[in-house]
Length: 608
Image (cartoon, rainbow, N blue to C red; front, side, top):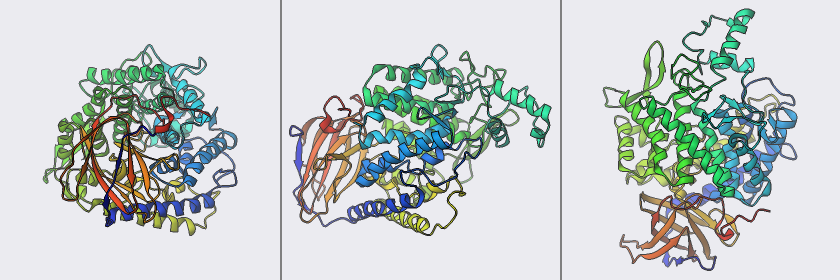
């Protein structure tokens, strides 16, 4: 640590409103978190809910989602309490799902789909940002990834020859080829998949006819359950997490093979990502060549969002572990297809197809979901990707200027992108105020909750969880919100408290990323303490994947000092009491092997 390049602030702070609001938001969340945990958990951490398994269906993710963002919040600067409890609760919920409900084996979900599994494991990925030295989590990362890269001969989720995950439902018990009937009925009833061009017709209440029910179930197993699907790309960050703990090449190699397979399939299908791939790796193999109709695919009610998010998180993870921007072509082809098949409204707004069906072709034209496009630009920093964002914004500029706190299940980085574009100068204050108000609303709802917790809706926890990371992610790390459906953190910067030897902004310190481009990032740091000097290490990337090349101080009048050369992923900043500093940090992006290691860990994480 003594060898890190160091720069010291000299300017006295006023202080700026955004800095005061940022620290107050952290204080508010720290105050609210114990209220939530005390209300909804038993001693030991298990959630207060039904004592018996409530029946087939995908819902294990909902238990993990009660605390899914607590570890990331700690890594941003939240309390030690939230960091410690995030590990306690992961263990407690895993035990509860295994022992009480039978949905987990060997600490991993048995056999669910990867839209829902991804919602489970976004929690696990962030635990490495709290403390990467926990041996149990390193072992879990290896074991979890091993379920897909072939470490366990009895769990054949993946076919390396065809480069496919063999079923839409998989996990610790291997691929599920015979669907639970509840999943058959649910997915057909809600339009999440089809039975293919020669499948039986679905009459009203078809499940009440025993012969038809058996026929449909058999057809579902044959067509749906023996295929790889786009949302299975949610496994890629799982394997990337093992790579960041261990650095072992076999994890990186698997990611390359699997993501490249999907890129090749998309290119072979005229730039359209196919939503089903058969047992031998052929597109539409069990659907008479139809590339649409697969599980959570082009015909599905939410297939548009699910496929877009899965491609985004897989491409980000592949770029992270390889440093190669070519993997971003996967979501790029997806977005370009939507533009090509889109329609323009009278106001000039682009309406893109959300579905493709046998009867109607490209259909259900609606505004685009901007989250993948903004993530793509943040990953590439290319002008063409920014221009695509501007195309999506045309005709709905007012919506992109609106600042609200929407919660983690409805991430909205549109207004943040306008702040980065040099517009919306009040955005930092507005989003911090909006998040603070939402923390207040959720905490009040928790304190007033008098329902029978053993009978409540399984989604209630995530709706009142007072830990909100939206503003802190955008403003302090300079990245869009983590993709809720299984993404890794993609911040341009990260912070470490040298005095407390932990991740996150030190006490009293606030940070604001003001600008981004391909070769630099501009950030302001403020120490609100009137007594204590604070030191903060700035990291180049969420996982040390970038390298600083220079640091230049920017004066209050906008003039720049002389650049100092830097050659590494860490920079130490000393902040005397009541001081602030603005820095322009030169950066070479995606040039280092990503790791969960902290600055003081050296080249190898000291697992304990």
